[in-house]
Image (cartoon, rainbow, N blue to C red):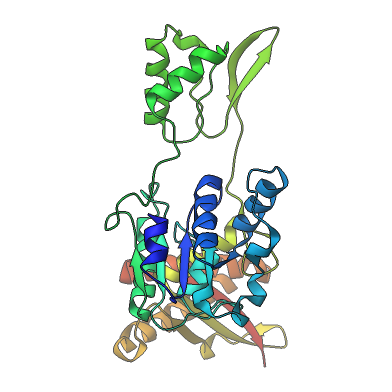
Amino acid sequence: TFTDLFESNPGRQMFITTISSNISRMSQIMTSALKHGRKVVLSGRSIEQSVKVARGLGVIKFHDDLFVDEREAGRFPQGDVVYIIAGCYGQPGSSLGRLSRGEHKEIVLEKDPIVIFSADPNPPGVDVAVERVMSAFTLFGAEVVYSRIQDNLHVSGHGTKGDLMTIASVVKPKFFIPIGGTITRMRAYTNMLGELGVSRDRVFECLEGDTVEFSSGRARKSGRLQTIPVYIDTAGSGSTINPVVIKDRDQLSSDGVFVVVIPSKDGKLLKDNVEVVTRGFIYVKASQELMDKSRKFVTKTLEKLSEKPLEWPAKKKRLESEIQDFLFKETRSSPLVIVHALNV
């Protein structure tokens, strides 16, 4: 199939995206590129690392002359190179994702390129992201090729039931811990092992946080660990992002923000001069009644809180909570509420 695609698209800028661990697929692309006089450009960290390891192990045996650094690729006629590019599952921060949005620092799309997806069927949950990337390329004017419209473009690298049964029969492990996939797929694996005579007490279906303890040739489940998601800021420093920040971003994207500014003079809050600013929550010009009602509510709540011996941090937290409840009752929405005291 790759040979046919190379032969039928001479002179066109060509991008092929596939799973970065599929060394065999990338080797096929390189073979076709060599046959048709194209240099290979690797784009994306995962692709570059996989090929580097494969070449170091001698699995990919092409000469250095076949490869062109991504930063130098623009100096070549684009019909003389082929890009093997990461991002087949539509990841926004991937090389392919950035290219689809015109945000790639090294690669510029030429007129009438061809973009080939050699990685589907997609795993659960990525269809929307993949379609978004495909649509962006199509709107640009690219021809997008994928397995539903092109035969023999993808062959699954996953083992069949027969393959898994063969591995289990040959290796003969004492215990089994199926990983990856949902509990339904784990149960299917457990049932498959049952066909081989493996008792269920030798198979551990582990959900997130489950632990298995091994001791003296025995194994047993031994409680759960508390796990929390770890988010990485790939667009910035690469550091982790606190879950509170993620929650705020989610709230901002769905219900907007409601900011209350309270003037403060000589340590006293001027509750009669409250300002309210909102973005992404309501259209202010069409909701003046709600804005006026909100100001009155804030003023009234401040008066009640002023009767209590609370420090500003505690008072601020209480005020934000009560405003949140008020807005939800009025609109059934929960914008992010921020209260700020401004010295005047």
